[in-house]
Picture 1 (cartoon, rainbow, N blue to C red):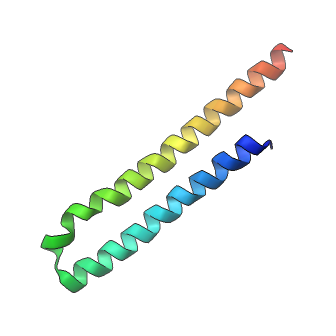
Picture 2 (picture 1 turned 30 degrees about the vertical axis):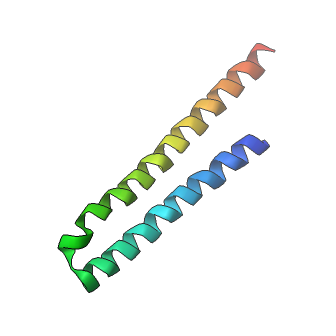
Length: 73
């Protein structure tokens, strides 16, 4: 696994961790202060999950590209 693949994996884990932390914090704050104030913040974990999925897609795309390049050589 090259350094770029390692970085992609770490960043994917980072975005999943951010997503989970945000869900937990927003649910806690919604219980404390009310759902009407915190309902809009549930968009943030969705964005974090989308970024993690995009990172995964791009990592797989890079892996296929590198395999194609290596096969060509």
